[in-house]
Length: 241
Image (cartoon, rainbow, N blue to C red; front, side, top):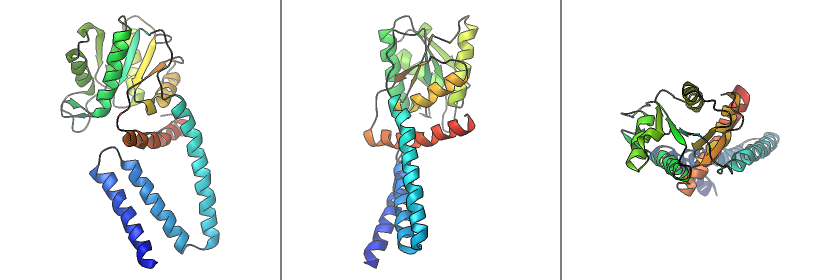
C-alpha cells in the first residue's frame, strides 16, 4: 500500500513536471496533477479536522471556478452581428518571425470575417515580446497579406504588450482616423479569451464590442487555456486589469 501510494505521488509529480516544462500549452494540466498529489498527501498525513477544512475549501473553490467558467464559456463564440467597420485582432506569441498556432487560428478567424465583410478594416495589435524578431502586428500583417487580404485593409498597432493596451491603442487609432469605436468594433481572439477582452473594452468605454471567436486548436490545449482564463478573469474582477 505504501509503495503504491508513493509511486502514484511520484507519477503525478513527474507528469506535472513533464506537462509544465516539456510541452507547450499544457501547463495547467501539470498544475492540476500537482494539486491532486497535494490532496492525496493532505488526506494521508493531516489530522481529520484539517482534512475536512481542505475538503470544504476545495469544494468552494470548485464552485467558484464553475461560476467563472460559465461567463467564459457563454462568451466563447462569435456574436451574431451584421458586420463592424473595424476588426481588432489581439496578438499572441510569435516564434522568431513566425506566428504561433494560437495566432494563426486568430488570423484564420480574421480572414474569414474580412471575406464575409468586405468593408471591414482589420487593426492587428501587438508589440515585440521575448523571443520575437518582429512585432506581433507585423507578423499578423504579413500573414494576412500573404493570404490575399488587401494591404489597405490591414492597419498595424505595434506597441501593445497586453490585452488592455491592444484595445486602448487600437481605439486610439480608430479615433485618429476620425471615427468612434463605440458601435463599430469587433474583437478577434481565442474563444476562451473573448469574455475578458469584452470586459476590458467596456472598461475603456466601448460597451458594445462584438466578439469573433478564432477556430479551436488542439482540444486539450484549449481546455488548458480555459482553465487558466478563470484566473485571468478573477484578476480582472479584483484588480481591474
